[in-house]
Image 1 (tube, rainbow, N blue to C red):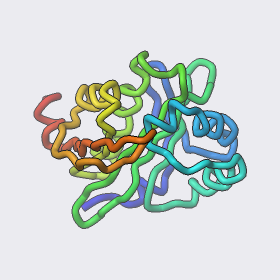
Image 2: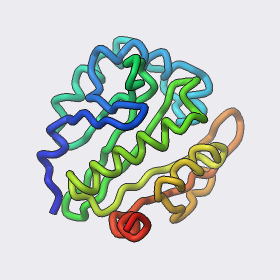
Image 3: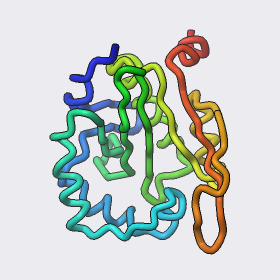
Image 4: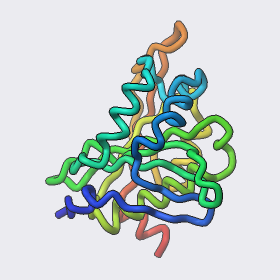
Length: 187
């Protein structure tokens, strides 16, 4: 049984170099700058063009969502916006949820993503009570796949030609982390 109130709490999770804080309107401009970046769009497979107004409304409404958790990744020292992540698509009877993360250009290859993932997984497993957290990653993003694997995600399958990007079809890997496997690897 999961604790659904843990999704409503909108916690602040602090790591060594980063802090995960509730995504809010104050993050909208930086979030928008990242969302329109061509490389960010490619890595996330985002076809939609988000306006600043759309992302302002999105960010402003996150605190009122009792069934998901949207957090900004901030530099612990400066408070700079480094990206955002979400625990979403919660299936309470089966204690599972979805996960996504997007870092701003310049925040990759520094271990920030791995630190953010570990913080969120700890919260998802230990506080929310999820058993399974799953995600999808495009075949042309091996850096993200390696980061997920370092955090305990395993490839469970492949959806062939699930994304049409830049004139070509691409596969998506389905990955998941399990609370029981995490306990085995850390205990």
